[in-house]
Length: 314
Image (tube, rainbow, N blue to C red):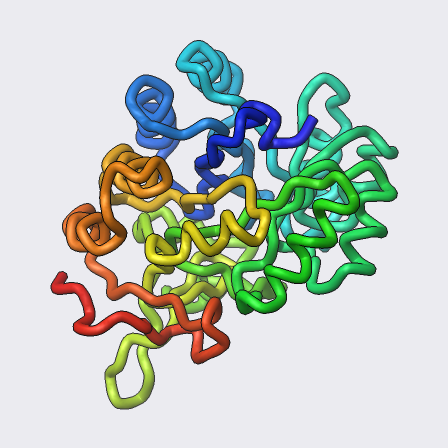
C-alpha cells in the first residue's frame, strides 16, 4: 500500500511527518492526541528518526497514540532512523522495519534488509535524486517515496513522470524546517559542554532545535541533536498546484511547536481551493514558531531565500 491509497479519488493527501525533535513523552502524546481528533491530515508518520537514544522515551505511548490516530481516521506509518552507526541504532531500526504487521517508511538503507521486499515507503533521508534510484527502489517493492526537500522543481517534475511510469506515489515536504545533514557527533551536547554519550538529553530544552548563528550574529542554521536543519521554515503554499501538476500525491508537514492543527487546516484549505495561498501564508505566519519563510531550494536558489515579496510579517 502507498500513502496515497486513501486519496485514490484524486484528492491530494496531506501528511504529518515524523517528529524530528525531542519533546517530553507526555507532551508528544498529547500532541498526537490533538492531531488525531482535530487535524485535517490523512497520514501520520510515527517513529524516532534522529537519535536512537531518544526512542525508548516514547515507546510506552506508541500503541495508544497509533490507536487514537486510527480512530480519528488517520493512517499510521512507522518511520525508521535516518542514520545507523551503532548496534543500538541497528536494533532500533530492526524493531521498526522488522515488524511485519505495520507499514514502514525506510529512512536508511539498513532498513531495507529487515523489510525484505515487503511493500514499504522511502523517506526523504534516502537520496532519491534521479530516475534510476527511483526505479531501483520501486523494484525492491517501494510503493511510496518522499523526495529529499532540497530538490528543485525541475528535478521533481522529472521524478514525477518516472513515478507515474513505475506506479509509485510521491510526497514532498511543504512546511517546516528543512533537514539538511546528520553527523556522528551531537552538536546539541557540544553546545552545552557535554558529549554524545552523556548528553542528558539536553535537546529536550529546544522544541524546534537550537539556532546556530554566524560570527556577525545572523541566524543561519538550526541544530537538533546530531541533525542540522535550516533556520527558516519551508513554506510551499504557493507551489501546491504546480506540484500536483507534476504528479505529487501527498504533501508533508513537519511537526513544530506551533499550532499544527491550524497549519494543517491552512494547507488543506489551499489544496481544496477554499483559500488563496496569499491569505494562507499571512495566517501561517501567526501560527508559530517565530521563523522566517523560505522556498529557495524549490526555485533552484539558496535554500534560505524566500521568493515572495514582501516577506510575510512575523
